[in-house]
Image (cartoon, rainbow, N blue to C red; front, side):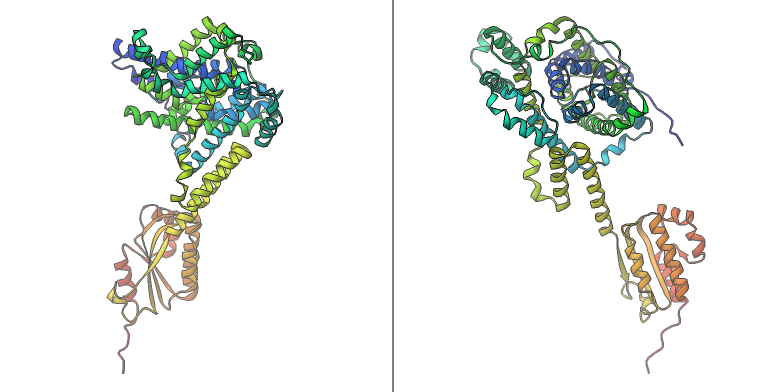
Length: 563
């Protein structure tokens, strides 16, 4: 059955009681987020092998749609660092035209996931997998920025790990000391601006607004200072203008992707990867935002908004979009109260493109590389590597393997392996928790002297395909007359478990052994009814093990006295 579609953006409920004071807060938050998003959007696009305007268009179009139609009150959407590796690989292997197709397909997948209420399933992906590929992506982002950080002259950067290392190693002799100096200076400013701005003795006395300068993102300060230095001193470093010809001062024309089957079938797996990563990133980001504002997002509404955004964004030259943690946290800390702040952020970026696009031509690529280096460092959860010793071996193997596969092979293989390893680990863990315990005369005095004829077993856990060995062991060691199974503590029985129970019924019937089941509850009772197991047992069902033992003892001859 197709579930009823519930499409209710959080914007609708957030506008209840909306007033001027809240709008002022949202306006300030939106302007602040736009300042943070401006350099990141361009940097993410360039690192992905695209022109800088692709990131800006995505932040404007997808950012507006995600805020207007999403299921979170304060989440900010746009291009994200997690997509860099995947997008760069698609562009290098299939071209920009097929990236548009892959992004559109990923949008359709995300929309379908929201319609069919699959938002909660994303939480089932283990944390070891998420940390592994997040750290792997951070390493690849940093590695991909070494070229511009050092100002190396490399005609075309490869997309794979070993190719990147080889290209960097063979072109180290082209290092540009001016670019390295700009990058290092930018990195120092990005890292230390908020920390040091208030401590600089000349700022407060000279500038009446000195205290407020510390709230300006370090990335913007670095961008302004580095651009000014390059322009004033005519430093021989590569800029957006020298590589891309600048940023257009208008939105691009509508471009409809080729949706032919021949093209779509090649882009299906990249699209699935983009959709899964986008879903994971956006819902994790929304959960972080919930914790900060004491709210609860609608994951299915969020996925539908993400889907619509990723369908619309590539139509205007954009790249994949998702929820972004850094910008969302900035939004919350800036006082946002509703999705209006995210919409203001998108409209502000639109105004910047229309008014100040020519200024972007002088931005040095070394500064954008430094900003992305900082993003990559903050993106990774590096402490998890030092804590691996406190976790079990399956967790360690999964995290490290996903990390290495992400870096050396690709993200798709890493996630596939991670989910497979997590499933195997889960099956093993659950099967190890499924156990049996034999009851004796100490538990039920009626069994005294009858243990050879009557066996009473209490089962615990889930009786599924990974734990049917318990039933097989019972089949191999049947008692002489009666077998009593206490199923009260069995929480789940799958089709394989039900089939094995039927085999036990047949084995007992063939051996002339009476089988009594006790305490079937909820799901096990339902599957026993649907598989016909209830009908096969007929009168051999008891409400609890005490009744089962009494029934078994009443049908057995009493033991003879000795002598």
